[in-house]
Length: 640
Ligand SMILES: [Zn+2]
Image (cartoon, rainbow, N blue to C red):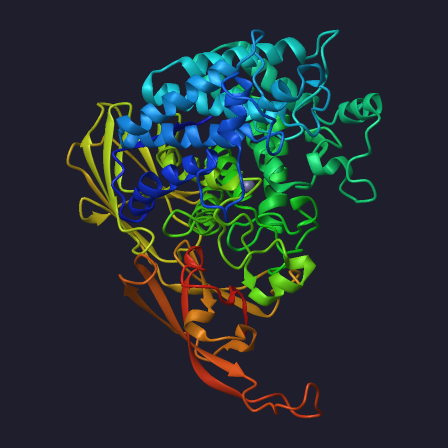
């Protein structure tokens, strides 16, 4: 084995901030999504057909397949979310519901292990003929992810056995051997799912297949081209610069320089590549991960952690192209960025990865769900004028309010499974050093060391860690110093700790004693953010961030025509804890200027001096909580 880091899950998460979201998951979002998957939501919501497809495929009902070829994945993601929630909140009724769904899924599986309701219902003779677009391998990936999670949470093997049989079937159809398809997933996820199965069950075949997918992708002759010519299908994205870049399948991954194409696919693919690089010690793949990370994060990521600048292909475009109002910023892409970031932290402990993970999590991931857990964003814009979404075709994908459900409902259950498994993102061990990446409140257990952590993160930068059990030998602890923090202090048993600072962490090595107490104090104040001036949309503008939370202005607090607002000459900011606003948030008040009140009613254009700007107070709220008080304008960046 290589030195790939090992995620160390937190247990007994007792975190005020995430705790309330996770309560909402269990109480509202999970039952709500089950209703959606069974078409039991009110008429206004788009139909799913998901569970019905499984019943038809299992012979329990008659009818035709409904939805997209990847419809099955919605129920798998839901099951994974349920499984993760059962780890921290046992719930026999929910588990019984999941068991019932699993029985139906297992009954739909074919004797040879195949399990995809689209082809089971529409005709098995056509299966494996369109790996590029028909998502069979994507569906398999989500089945495996759900199965491993459910097995780990409950010890029940029904879904796991089904997943292993499907994986074996895939292994018999695709691979390097003569007579097999030399293909790979059109929509990645199976790569990281197989790696998860390999970690859980230790079968080398799963590692081999994942590594094959990663190494085979984009190799000449291009599989997707050969497949297309065989079937006489149209070229993908004909006339668009996307082409096979949409699938990140235009060149071998080791030769790709830029994060391109469909942003969700990219994040899932890079995550799987990092897993394979870590497990096989393949330095060339690790270098490709680093290169693609830098492209995505340093030149193509929004300040909220959103990815995908264009609706065309739900894709990356080019460096520094980050329009705020026509952005795609799919919730799933930010969820995928969190996956990728944790895997980069396993490849090498660098604070930058955790900074990005936190940026996505607290902003563009969390904004995907309404505070009541029953409405969801697919697209996460940084600037919205509701009328423009209605009238402008280039903005019609941007919704000014969260939706009850989607015909393509990838995002809602994706968000659930991530938030339900947050404990897996708290820490990573490399050698005998435990790296703390997310400051959740809870318990960390690792090799005889037990740490109790407490924090009021993200509203307060004070984190306390207590050692409640310690091994005999020396161990290193590495506490992340977030990139947004300028001033910090680390105390060990009340005294300034002699920590070594390395790659965004404060490291302490010693023989820990039961009762040792660490206090990390991170200065958490509102700070103005500016962008690389090459970002045309935001040059000359500022955004506001406090700790990991990015803020925005909403019409509800600041009136209409938010584009008229500028930052005032006084950069100071006042914070206020508002327990009854948006579920309890810190709001920020700053000085500002509002232009244009002296403009004459009857002039669209005029030869006059710059309009007058009068001083106003700007009230900022956390971006993740926008659009929870009715429909209105919103913006993250304002002019200086
Ligand atoms: Zn999605």
